[in-house]
Length: 370
Image (cartoon, rainbow, N blue to C red; front, side, top):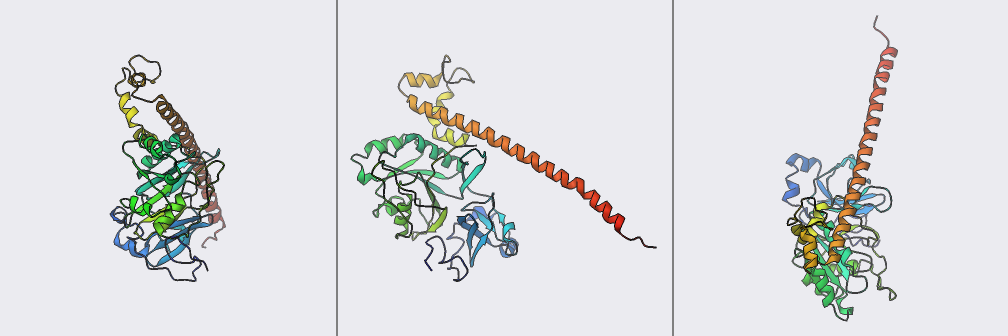
């Protein structure tokens, strides 16, 4: 049986004993411990979701390796209080961070990407795949989640001049570190060491082929995770990762590798967008009118900055686009939640209306004492 390179032991079918692992190694800390009392720790021990399958979740704890049926409210990285008798009833703990997006298509649902991530490495290549608007979108997602975003530039060894890519990436936000590196060398372990400390959980996000799996392999010191070469025609990589999965690497950190996302729609991310574009947000406070649309109004500090060359009009346009997208998606999701709540209320009422009839019939059929 081939060894699973993810967190934990070989095999998932019970043929092998779980490899010794502590809660601290899995990322357990005071934030989660404060949510559980001593009795709960014994009756329902903590486990972490380390792999997401269509058939359910693989969870790992101290001396525990098990599967939990799929649930819409749980994602990779979550901590559960494991109910041995009824795994589906395991209680999910409050999260320290949550990466989410609007699900692709027309379903108007929120898709959970990962939970309890400390640092999000947003990976992009120094080639034709580089896209500043996509970087801003990913950084906004990370800020909104509560995790720390870091931009990682790969394939620097293949670029004729990586300097323009580095400069552009640094322009996304003054609060976000930019790390250029060659993902195939020993450099990733050294360059990312400040964030990859024992017990810390990090995630690699980005489009397919930018080097996410290669970076995970570099940190793990192995080639257990499949990678594929970049297509020469368009500098894009082929899709390699097929599921969201946590990996424990020698430095002691836990790494999440994810499939590349072709579509990243933001929803309920207003504060994350504001964090990315805090330079523009700061300018808006100087506008003459509170309801300034930052278009043709007199006394608009934003348009003034554009006219003076202090603000790139392309950046302003991207800010507007993300704001409009987030507002529209947030309203759509709010409407969907309202409809779901209304439907649930109807179902509960219908169930309640039927109950007295059953009780009445049972009473009618019950023989009387004479």
